[in-house]
Image (cartoon, rainbow, N blue to C red; front, side, top):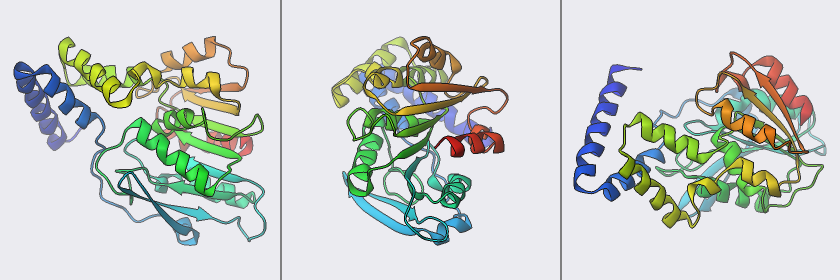
Length: 284
């Protein structure tokens, strides 16, 4: 971690601690704002495959969502239509290797930057907003026969699949998905050393804002309403979306889910590993 990042964390912790002394509720709301704010990253040049894509955009809740559509390599009628979904602090540009692989198999590929990410507008993102983006993409450009989603994108996709059209023939690849929102919140609160009182206010704020408790936003719960065939790929050393949550899902023996566990790839290398990429492309 760079010195600037360390100093920023010290400042945030101090700010929240002082705010909590006056009002745990206000501290919780400020913590939620931080929780939903991706790091500002310079918009880097996109890989060459993006020059072959058709630029797309639409409006969603005051945001401009930007993305691309790629025709199959060599043209022709697409064999399948696939949607790629990135994670928190990420962008569709990081999935160029999948785009090229899917196009080479004759697939039509779609990918968008979520609100507050990449070239899309906004400063904050939350799970219902990301899910609403997927809903609109499915309604506008679908139906999709395949989905590839990483991390936070996996949680948002699971939420959307509870109601967007799909069937047992639909194929879904979940790569290190954010399985339980409560785990993400608890890790965040622990990292910022928030008091128990502030944590409780944090959870109350989410329920008031979303109309559901944080525990509702769970892939384990969503699977009860999902009919698609799923390949779930997760690394045993993942320190962002921990294995313990995944193992609880596995214990449910969901009939349409196949699990593939790796070791040593962590949360981000897993979707760049050549063997995993081939496994996912072949599956979809």
